[in-house]
Image (cartoon, rainbow, N blue to C red; front, side, top):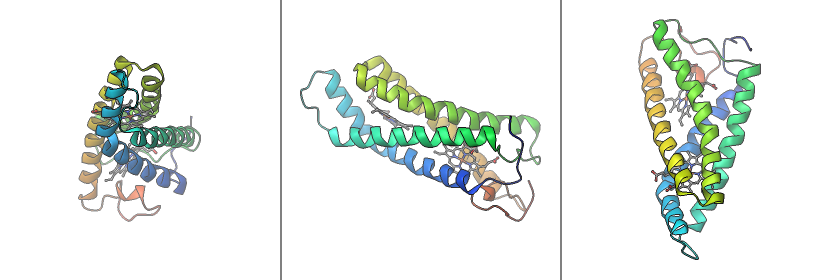
Length: 169
Ligand code: HEM
Ligand code: HEM
């Protein structure tokens, strides 16, 4: 298992913000894609929304590739330690959310692709349910990031865009 470097690498930071952008776009397309999928399941010959499903599938594949790269980086290079300014249960919760992101963001594209190829309403439902779980993780994660951002002399949040932010962790 990798150790704890004192900062995120440029690749880790760029990959983090790429994922934020891609995930945002996936949610913006969600309604159109769900409508197209509903039409497909009802046996419509040409369900409307073919454009969005292509883009959604392509973005989903990109998310899978970037997350696989991040997982590799995390296991080989490692990530900085959790902020010691927080009590142990909070440190644990924040790391648990990070690991859950990997699981959910690698599983989502697989569920999505299987739903389309198998034309399975059940797998589509699993995909949709997982997107709700992802939303919960995002709310918790951003809550933590904003909390650290506004605490005096706390560099936890800034270390996702600077390698040498002032302050302490
Ligand atoms: C991490 C990647 C992905 C994210 C974040 C994501 C997100 C979403 C969201 C937010 C919805 C709308 C759910 C709702 O109606 O409440 C959705 C629906 C859907 N997505 Fe994805 N998606 C991803 C990858 C994929 C991939 C790769 C495919 C395959 C082509 C796909 C296929 C679908 C389908 C078929 C639906 C409709 C499901 C249904 O209505 O039951 N998704 N996705
Ligand atoms: C789709 C939304 C997001 C996802 C999926 C996500 C995912 C992650 C993951 C997995 C990590 C762990 C580091 C790693 O393994 O590379 C992380 C760290 C971090 N994220 Fe996000 N993030 C999201 C949005 C945000 C936003 C909007 C902010 C800022 C407001 C943010 C700030 C941070 C910070 C500061 C860290 C470092 C925390 C630490 O090292 O303890 N993230 N993020």
